[in-house]
Length: 469
View 1 (cartoon, rainbow, N blue to C red):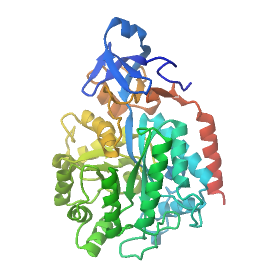
View 2 (cartoon, helix red, strand yellow):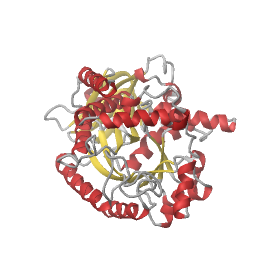
View 3 (cartoon, rainbow, N blue to C red):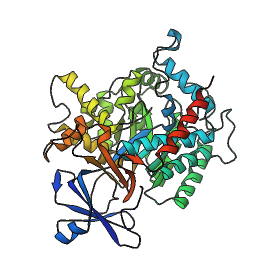
């Protein structure tokens, strides 16, 4: 049953798992407490506190994972484009055809139902915060909704209903590609120009601040890419984001063709161009970044920017990995995203990234001497920093966002305090995730959401409508 961790009328509530991950190690005999607002107030080993805390026997508590880059509606594409497409459509043509078909059929109700399914699946994977890179704005024929931000509000409503924190990264698309005319972007995501986009963004910011607590839902700016947002419009959006202290996320150098096309239009590769224009800073996140020069990597590091990599999605689409080792060495942060929802499992993404590096270097571990800690840090602390979230660690003052792992699950059974994190990162089966708490409120109990049946049922119905012949 979904319930508050702080009893009604009480000043605080607490938990006592077998082990708690405190950021450096797992500790035993340690309870932690949160106030009525869901913020962690203290850790304690006092006998009276241990007796008062809710016992989570046979479980370890870890900070909730942060999914930095998600397209929720892509969940309907899973398994729908795995056959090879027609040769003339290119290497990802089948996926693009399925994407465009689904995009043309999604109703407002479908957007809500699919987002709820996607967000619930994230909770099942221990994810308590998501950056939703949302670009479906209009009706299927391109006509604006009577309320321009209707679908953005449906995404927010879905996140609230499921109980996950959300940074709504509101996407702008003006044109179809580099050198394409303004207004050529897909009809459901097209904006008339930066002025219209910024008006909608400002209206959405007001709605979010009025209707949601500041750390439950918040706004970010997201020019889709330099391919779809010309440089002048991109700069206008970046200027607004900086003035409002919003995070700025954008796809960068996803493909070699994109990097080359940017150079052809502007005389600079994407990251070099954005650095030249003063866009890069600590609130900037480059998504994908598969094709970066060494100089561009250094520019990201100098700006203390972040890079969001999506290994599961990239592998599914046949894209190469980003130069993660160089990015970290330069001083930029690396976070993880589920992107196309081919799978929703950030721990699987983390281990696949590390394993790719091991194959390249013929060395294990590859990312760092203690790669498990570095990977978990990327999936929590760096992801939270990229989104401007208050979560990402179990610390006093931060929200009580955490998931528990069944210590007797076969995938981690036998681990001790020194090896449990490596077991979690490299071997955890998702079924071992037992309970999930967001802001001290229990969202998953025994691996199940209170609305599990209805969420899945409505998603199945939406799939039938979308893919009906």
